[in-house]
Image (cartoon, rainbow, N blue to C red; front, side, top):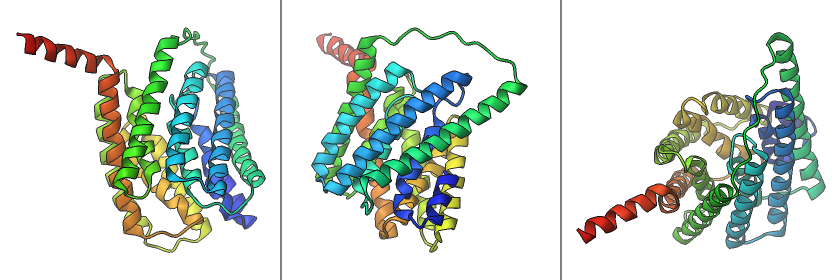
Length: 318
């Protein structure tokens, strides 16, 4: 994240920083995979990230309405979920891509489509090159472990999973617009987070971790948004927060969100200035809306919901 941001600061093109930040998130994919498999999956995820960012920027330039954003985000969640599951890209699901699409679509953009495409693709390429360089170094010092390929995912499971994402994003975005906090894309993003664990027993707990971690991140954001950061200071701060989030995301999801929530809020500091408390309060409210919607969707579309309904019918019959 830091390298592309510093390049844009030196070129005095900080209006492109949001595109570069999302391109750099390509580095989170395929981290624990063998050498060439990681290269393939990072390249695929980088291409998906470039397409979603360009699509989001195009909506920002065209001035699409909030409802059009909800519909478009629902389609993106459905398609990306299908593609990511078929390609077996990890981390699974469209969470990162929905973040990129909705944030760029909702933020003002003063550049051209070509500049946005160049910023996101250059940043994604930097992440891929750094990732492959690290794996080449590791391969010289660690034994090569051949891991068997997992069988292809079942079509029914892939379709059901993508349907959950689409339903959660559509419901969360619509509810947030009707309640009117002001940043509906955060509700859609929060709805995606627990869906990746929808088939696991701990999905509601993950939603709770997401909410609590975001609350902690909102408080941290309120403090970090007070100083008037220079572009270089803001770039270093964002990179440090992203590093902390990635360190903890597989170990303690709530603590990871404490680091990652300020990234989402602070990145807008390059392109616009917004009231601090209004921004942080909206983030907390919409995160709660999205996460609770996800829990309801998971309950209604998985075996736990069906089992619960069957038990209720049997109890009423008795």
